[in-house]
Length: 445
Image (tube, rainbow, N blue to C red; front, side, top):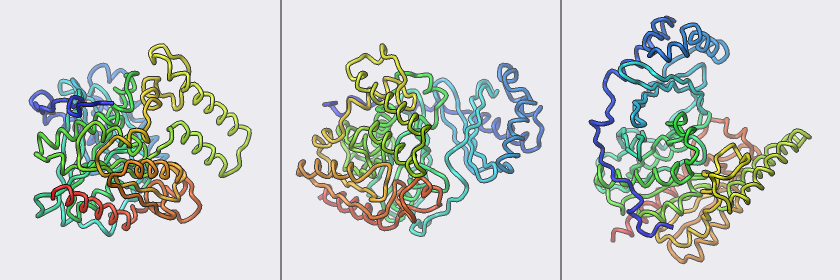
């Protein structure tokens, strides 16, 4: 484990002259979409470089958009543009709806030409509405670009109005590619949390996860690890808040949801902050939860022979992880769960969150839904037991019927519950609010 907490941080210099996107990059993607709106596909491909024109000619581009409109619904633009970088490339995202389904359009731009284009379906639908506890007059939003290694993390800070000395919470996602809202169907749990807290004097920083922003690049990096995807980016965000925003460590809280909660102990063990909130974080190994979740979901409709074969194949992949413990990832052969690399999995299996949480000094709040089938009360009890042994400040709360997205199930726990557009329960927001303010007050006495 890291002993000098500051040694792991990159020096965030923000020499924007080296990475700033020219205005033409934004205009180029705008012109491309204008051509698509007008069904002028020849004009659209005229903005491509020669290689991309060969790869995606006008008729192929037309077919792709027309098929989406046919099967998903009419195309409309979302009021959102993201400009970032993966050195040396300039990247622009624009966001679309096809019917009710969200998509993002990835542009790589080079010398005033589009050199890369990819249309990706998102996990979100156009059903989100603001929760009642979000008072937009009580805070403002600031968009940020944060350098983490050789790429830029895009995000936003919700800043309370007329409050000078506010605590700030960094929201850390669960597993897999996630946007800043941790969006799923019509639900935006991170936006709910950020707006709920910011309406009551607590700032929040939400960011787009590196694996969501840069799948094209990171898929080519077999040595990419869970720490790089989660912990290292958070460390650089803390450094950004310190150096650029002038916010001291004793004002910063970390909130980890799901796998972000699992990773929270080792992040807290690597940097100094005011405290941490663990929301539905898994204490048990990720591979154990993966099998449980698959078995649970297959069992909802009865496990047939095909399901049994899938579970057996998954178990074989999980069993290989034990071999990986004593093998150099570079020399490991064999398929692992979800096709993730040996480097990624070795980083996960060599880390024990329960053991690590015993060594941290920051106060912790533990939150768990009792109706959560993805991360269960078994995990909650393991963390609570460890926190009790630690004999430092902590608060642990579980909520009846609450699921993994932090709203109450209407029916029996299942993935179907996520398809309803709901909000993080107001009483959970209130409990987090009370704990953060009280912890912040005590730390500044």
